[in-house]
Every structure is written in C-alpha cells, then in structure tokens.
Image 1 (tube, rainbow over the protein chains, first blue to last red):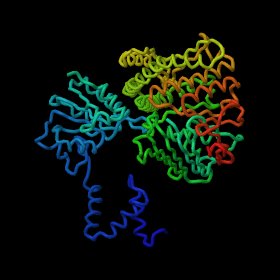
Image 2: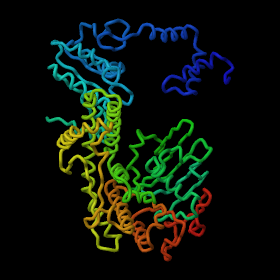
Image 3: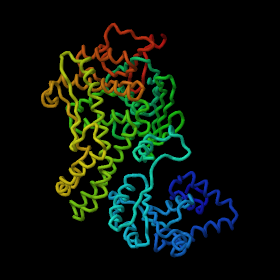
Image 4: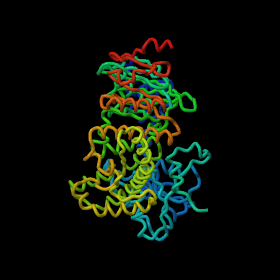
Length: 198
Length: 381
C-alpha cells in the first residue's frame, strides 16, 4: 500500500479513473476533500448520486434532463418550428450559452463512425424523423466539423430532404474577435471555400 | 534555415551527445553501426517532429531507458533563433514537442516550418519501388509546402478508413450498401481536394526536375514526372467537376468494392510516373540513370521547398556516396554546399574533394560508439 490510509487510496484510485485526471492530480484532489468540512463533502457526494438517480434522457429530444419532457421541450417560449440537431448534450449547453437560438433541440448521441461500430441505428435518428410534422419549418444540422460529423450531416440531409422540410447546416469559419492572421491555415481555407456573395 | 546546435539524450545509441554545427557542410564520419545516421534521424525529429526512417517513436529510444530528449537550436533565414525540444516517455508512449517553450496545437502544424530534404539509401524505393513509395515522397514535399494539404490528407485518410470498414463489413457479413452513401460524399469531398493539390503540385514541380536533372546528369536527357490519377483531374478543374467524376467512378466500381471489401477509387491508389526521354524509368532506365533521377528529385525538392516555404531547407545526406560515383558525388556536394547547410554521413572521407578546406563553416565530426568528437583543429579555428 502506498498510502497510510486505505480510504485515501481508494478515493485516489476513483479520481484517477476520471478523464483527464492523472495519479498526481487525483492525489491532490483526495487530500483536498479530506480537508473539507463534512457537510461540504456530503453535498458533493449527494450531487454525484443525484446525477445517477435523477438524470435521464428526454423522451422527445434525447437531451439529459430531470423532468420529462425536458425544460426546453416543454417551454412555451421556444419556437417549436425549428429543431437544431446536435451530437451530444454538451453541444446543447454550448448553443444555449449563446442565448441566440430559441428553437428546440435534438440530441443524436454521437456521430456516424463505422470504425467504432456506430451506425444510424445507434443514433436517435428514428426519433428525429418521428418529430418531423407539418409544423416543423426548419432543421438545423450542427454537427462537429470533422469527418464523422460531415458524414452524419450528409446522411441526415439525405433523409430529411424528401420530407419537404428546410434543412440547413451551421456555417464554419473564423473565430470572432481573432485577427485573420492568427487563424490556422485549415480554418482559413475552409472559410475561403465557404465564402458568400454580398 | 540552419541547425546551429543539437543535443541527443538516450536517443538510439547516443546517451548524451552534443554537437555544434558548421553553417555549410557537416561531415559525420565513422564506421558503420556507430550512430551517424542516428544523428540525422534526430535532426529529422527536430524539424518534422518525427523520423524520416523509423515507423514509431518507441524504436528510437535507447534500450532499457524510459525517455529520450532532443534539443535543437534552429536559425531561420531571417536570423531568428528557435529552440526546439522533443521529449518522449515510453511509459505513457507520449511525445511532447516544444517550440520556444510552447507546445504547437498539432504535430502536423510544425511540418513545413523547418523544411528538410533527406536523401538516404531507403530512398531508392522512390524510383525502384511501388506507387506508395512515390506517393510518400510526394506527400512529404507537398506537406512541407502546404499545411492545408496535411489537413486534407489526414481527413481523406480518416474518411477512407471509415468507408473501408463498411465495405469490409458488407463483404464479410452482407448488409445494405446504403450505409456507404454519406461516406462516399465525405470521401469525394476530401479526395477531390487532395487530387487537385497533387496535380497542381506536379505541374509546378516539373520544371524544377528539368533544371535539377540538367545540372547533375552527364548526358542530355529529358526527365518527366507526371501524376497519374485514377479519377481524371486537370490542374484547372474545379473541385466540383473532379468530385462529379470521382462519384461516377465510385459508382462504376461499386460492385468490385463490395466484393473485395475496400475502396478502389481515389488518390490513395494513384501512381506517380517518372520517365526519361519518354521511356518509363522503372522499366527501361539503367542503375546510373535511376541514381541520377533520384538525386535530381531531391535537388528539385530543395529548390521547390526553398521557394515555397521562403526558408532554405536543411539537407541530410545519409551514406549516399556509396551509391554515386566520384564525379556525381562531388557535383552534388558542390551544388548543395553553395546553397545551404548540409549534413553528410559517410564511412570514407575520400568522398570530399581533397582540396576541401575544413574551417568554421565546414566541420568534421567522428562518431564512435554513440559519441561525437569534433575534429580539433577546426574547433579552435
């Protein structure tokens, strides 16, 4: 045993299993917890248990939620005619932070990747198609700008177009606030390809 | 660009080797198996973040050690010094690159910043070997001159692997070929860009070869290089036009692809054709012509990169003079020495012309048992 306490050792091991956490960080975190007041630790532990017990997937958009349907799907303030399709719940969080999008979401749960054995049936594609009614005006495809995201975009656009609904994809280009000269070459060349007429 | 200094720690047979280089010619002398090529390999790491030779980082680690470290001081043409440091740890199989203390976003973003041209015995594959040997040569030249190309090729390879997985699944277990559709488009999208870049590259590169060959060859011969794509592509085609042809070709080969279980159309199966006076090099050229052609390719690469990167490449010549006759060797040394910094490994000092004057710019090192000794009288100069 490397530690004088079995409990500390166990906690270090648990922390070390988290993504991005190495042995040393795990050790620092464990010792930090040890110094916290008991009630703080109880709140922390309860938060961990809560996300397992209370969080589930929205039956409409497949985003993570505690109430079903989720607060976005059930909000009367959202524009119900626009659905933004994303890969993961964290993408919803990112778009929500902009405060610019007031439509609904659909979380696929990943992107097509044959090498990882992820095909259309492993994503929430059927659920998306079931949501397309006459009231839906536009579907925005907001996949990640990589090969898998691209293939997923192409796949979905093929499926959606016959349903006579407007299908768009988010633009890719330069980060705001950055100067042109600081953009990496690949981003800049994509931005050039995606140029628009004025 | 010049390499001013390099330090190797636990890299192949070099436990702790430090070298202060001359600004023109650096001769690395010594018997075989003492670590001359390892120094060139270390220089390749410093410039490209990888070896021109070994397939993995772990291979170059000294036996029984848990890390290697390389440090280099690189001087750009405009006179700015860059400190490059590379550390590899075997336990995590993790390599870290620091340029002036900062980690670059990706390793591929470093390629082209410090251009190098390597000529080593393995390079004879470029003229003698398979199409994939020639594509590898071409990719490294284009990659060093265009960072966007590196990204395009990486994305193309990713799309290709994904598509091949579906094809091999279908060929083995059956299934619907509809799953291929989105990957066809992704493949075509990136493949067309790769195709166009390569075709345009060869259009630009051809005159460089002509000039380089004329400078080295004894005979009056005309060399040709041509990219032979399996999807028809001309330099001035638009990506959309190439994409349409690519798609049509995929459709045409669909049945074969489903049967074989892999992608048969695209730039990963293209050939680069070399010829002399209209005759295919692989089939008709003599040994001597092969060698001259290879050296011409490398000299052309040097001039092409020099113009494209606006930075003079460093030239690494690994044991090339056993392959070339005396006149050709000295022509090459004279040609390259007049242009930039060269690192030459050889077992015999006789390859250098006897009138060569070793001074501060031209240095000799003897490499023995993983240690380097600079020849005394030059160090004092």
